[in-house]
Image 1 (cartoon, chains in turn yellow, brown, cyan):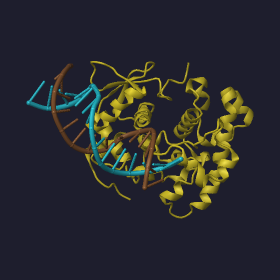
Image 2 (tube, protein in one colour):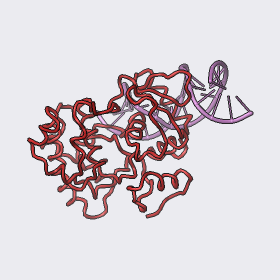
Image 3 (cartoon, rainbow, N blue to C red):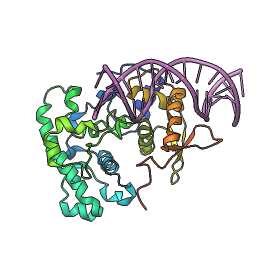
Image 4 (tube, rainbow, N blue to C red):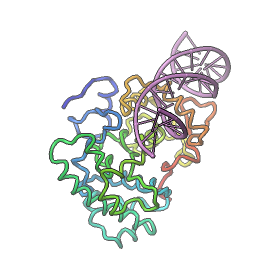
Length: 273
DNA sequence: GTTGCCTTTCCTGTTT
DNA sequence: AAAACAGGAAAGGCAA
């Protein structure tokens, strides 16, 4: 496997995305929604702390629970530790959200195993989608690719049920129709400062104000995610401006490259309180 | 095949 | 002067 192209951006990213992203053989190759190829680590038992964190964000997001409702620090652990928690442990760690989390992780453990069998050989994108939690297992260096993916999509309040799991190859991926939305992509870069090589930074964390530091670099990453090599900040920003109307973003007047999350943007708030 | 959502692309004009 | 910002308009891609 090799890096398909070697733009400045890519070399920058592969080197600056953080010391713990040593996936030299996993360049930023991803084609649109088929980027969720990383099933080899689809089993939560093997998740890193970061992946655990990501899973948390998604479950909260999916269930429309404000992340500040639970002490995320209680989940400062890797997948192995997470999987060893009992139902009661989840209750202790997350209160009323505990059961939801427990349920989710139970499903994932289950389907992770299942998936391994499926995926012995080379996994094709189609197969990846069969993973109920496809994006969770991407390599750490690719946070911008998948932070927000579709957690197991559900219409019901409690997303992960054994039923869903069993028929995951069909249902589960349906929800987040087109994968991560732009604002989620932006949010997820912001939420991962350790892996965000100076692309975007918070201006006011509690108010949700942030600023693009490398607008074109972000645009390129977005384009990469969408398999669109001609993405530019100009075009990306047009999409951002459409968010004003939907109140996913609020205008910040007079400050270039500065945006603010609006009432309809979820999952960006600081979790601890 | 149609529809709706979410961009993407292009463009003209304005502001910083 | 260059880079951003503002939006309108239309097209594209995708899933339901």
